[in-house]
Amino acid sequence: SMQCYPALVLALSSLLGALALLQLSLYLRVPSRYGKHEERLCRPRGRLPARCAWFLQELPSFLVPALLLALRSPPRLEPLGCRLLCCLFCWHYFYRTFIYPFFTRGRPFPLQLLFFGMLFCIYNGFLQGYYLIYCAEYPNDWCTDIRFTSGLLLFLLGMGINIHSDLLLRQLRKPGEVTYKIPQGGLFTYVSGANYFGEIVEWFGFAIATWSLPAFAFALFTLCCIGPRAYHHHRYYLKTFTDYPKSRKALIPFVF
Ligand code: NDX
Image (cartoon, rainbow, N blue to C red; front, side, top):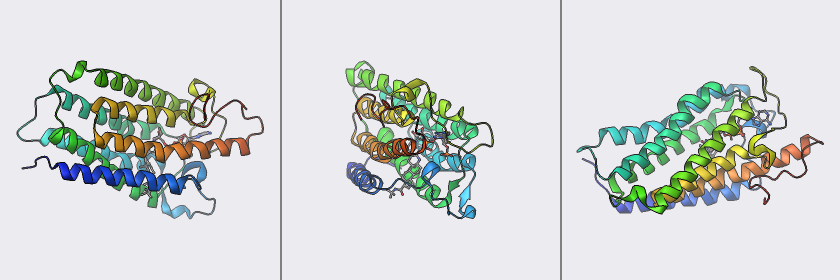
């Protein structure tokens, strides 16, 4: 049966960190080509409806750690921290897989990116789940540790911002519409990438709560993946709407 190989965790986390930096260097200059940054000429056959695409892409991030958690033998009951933290991860991806896609009004998603997105979700779902279920050691009172409580608070705050902001974006369109408008309300009052800001806060909160290398690597990956994307969204809005609010920042309220 499976056991903890610290060298495997170190190798997978390092690769994730390296992928993060690769993304940063790629996507600072040009945005990844989906949504409002997809080139017009893209052949329509290479795409899947947003609903199926997001469901398929994110499913492994829920399924892999959930299966690892359920199938671990002997079941790991102690300490409570490991299961709680693994459940947090699954909870986010339950939302992202089973709720978010069914309400999205997004454009069809490029198949090629879907493929890489799925690979990424398998990889990261395995790394986070494997680490928490087979490797992590927490003292029995981890749930009252300041890292756990403050991290959990950030996670919940970030998740709230992320879900609320995705809801505001969705309400900009009627069903079937694919045009872009100026997002209003919530944290969009301050930044163009409010949903991304929430997601980044969420995963840094998770990293603090788990106090683990894999989770910090994933938080860094998230920052390098959607941080640049927030910047490109911001530039797109400034270029497209002459009446775009001047005081609004790209990602971090009042700062950047
Ligand atoms: N999926 C994470 N890299 C990604 C998919 C692409 O979950 O090869 C990372 C995720 C993947 C990426 C994933 C990993 C890296 C990949 C990349 C593809 C290439 C890249 C694999 C897995 C790669 C290397 C080289 C390193 C291997 O029509 P539309 O779709 O634009 O409509 C949008 C709508 N909307 C508006 N409607 C009206 N008016 C406006 N002004 C609007 N603006 C937007 O709102 C959408 O329907 C919706 C949201 O759009 P947008 O663009 O704000 O968010 P989106 O990027 O689609 O993300 C959706 C949610 C969001 O909450 C975000 O935080 C979360 O997913 N997310 C997204 C990406 C990654 C991620 C989280 C993470 O890293 N944690």
